[in-house]
Length: 306
Image (tube, rainbow, N blue to C red):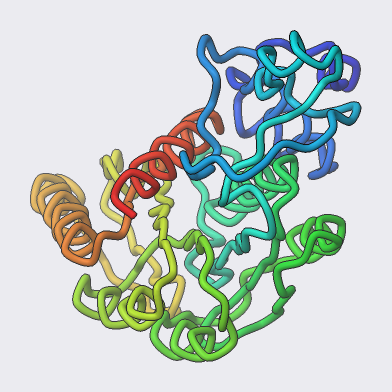
């Protein structure tokens, strides 16, 4: 498995089971392999959120995407120049990662937090490749760790991601409102959470960040068991946030539970749409390229409405 994930060798990283990726234990290797495999496997040029407003040319340097070389200028000058756009330089990007106790749940070999760590690592690496500033915030009911966006913080982000553990109950409002004061410069903020709160509370928590002009992407991470409720035998279910145990007869609750989940997702979708926030539900059984594709699609839509 280790050889199959070496950069330049893997061509189908996007099809690798997240459970397998989580067991590798090297977040940097996983992020680099998945992102490179994802980009190489796309049939069209990926959209990384750059503005369509051309700014200037700069000399080509090894590692630049050759799809951005101005071939007409090359024909005139016999030199390689790369097109730069307004949003290419100094863009701020940060992942806001929920590390509350409920994120420690997993029914299929990977927890929600482990999946979120992989998603965050891949997204950060993807953005870092574009030479944008990257940052990270981990939080539960308060800010746990804060890595400000910087072009030099990629390794720090991966280190903080790797040591994140779910230990306390969570709440969105307090940490996100605190962060609204820290992020002075507008940027792209990606919230990754299981959103175990009332949709109106989620709305209240993220609205201040949105009102400050930030582009927000919300990834709602759920385990397959939380979506489908596949249980059959009566047993006690524990609330991971409070520790309370509740006796449940699944057959009597299953359909009602699924209806509540659908209603919760629909409400979040509506609330985010009202605030012009992009929202996507991520199933931890899904390949990581789903999150990457969703992010790139969202960035393209955001740029079109600016």
